[in-house]
Amino acid sequence: MGQPMSHDAEALARACAHLNALPQGSSDFDLNPGYRMPAGRPLRDAAVLVALFDRPAGMSVLLTKRASGLRHHPGQIALPGGKIDPGDADADAAALREAQEEVALDPDMVRILGRLPSHETVTGYTVTPVLGQVTGDFKPVPERGEVDEAFFVPLAHLADPSNYRVERRRWLGQWRAYYVVPWGPYYIWGATARMMRMLAEGLQESGARDVLQRRR
Image (cartoon, rainbow, N blue to C red; front, top):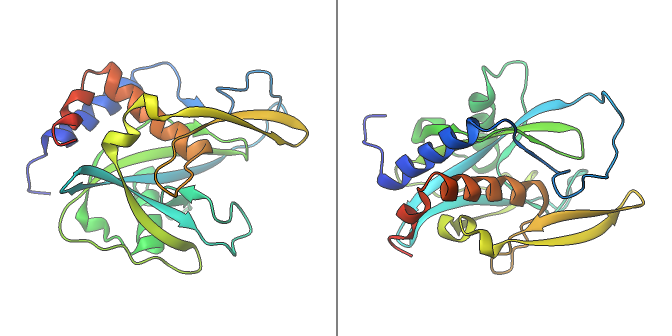
């Protein structure tokens, strides 16, 4: 893309570089060190797009509410994304394809800023979060078979670690702890909240978070 990278986008790119220099990523087991899964279980590759929009209140992230009729995770808040298909060149291509399928986001409108370290889910996926800055005028059009709603959350909210809390619930006979970062009526939790908290940690540790507070 020919347009220059914004200050906020530069901060996010620095956070990605900082996080990828760390020895490991995140997982659903970060808060559950005693939780046991089968040794050597196969993990499927997936990717999600952290789509960033420059809005009047500041940079914001596009999230979706999964369709209530889906077999897996109905009604949950998620980033656009899914499994990496054999025809996808890489995680970036998969994340862009899924965002186009779910909310009609044209891949040509997205400048890739970097990737967060992978996140392992309790359901057996290795998820690569891809950060992309969206340029131009875009209004999400949810694919009703997959998405009930698409909405925006200010990055300043997601980038503040104090907005996160830990909750617990029983899953497969064991107590499982997880992060939540509520926004208005939306209950953002689990893998999505953990990946966003990882980004918040990267922004804070890389000294870039203050850039995002300019229009808060």
